[in-house]
Length: 174
Image (cartoon, rainbow, N blue to C red; front, side):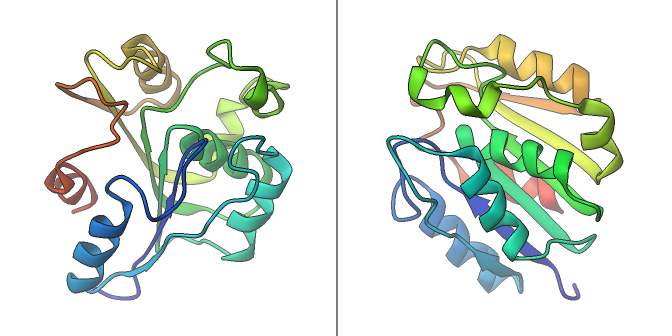
């Protein structure tokens, strides 16, 4: 493996010290990846423009894998709408297709997704969703899988992928 880099983005009301982010970072670093898990601002009242700016500051390219959990996945896709370089792979996990009636994240959905531009700026997409997610229903993953023309991995659970077997991610990025 050469020069592969992973950027893991947490979701709304979260930070890089929660959930599976730290263990994923450690596991992928042991596998030879460079891994970044930035803390995104405004955990409770996030601003899309700020999150996109942080992703852009890393200058992702074709050797990068973007992994976005929940709202972090939406930020990855919105970044791809606005960048001029191609990313190697993007994996979204339990990401909402729309606001899911949560006003604090409305600014992430003010404009529809430009799936043509998103697909142009990433070589490969994957989506991971739970069968019984209390926050983001499975049909959001089904919509993304159709629009991104990607594989949808469905896991059993009721945690909004707050807990997850990291081997699922490992198998997808190989």
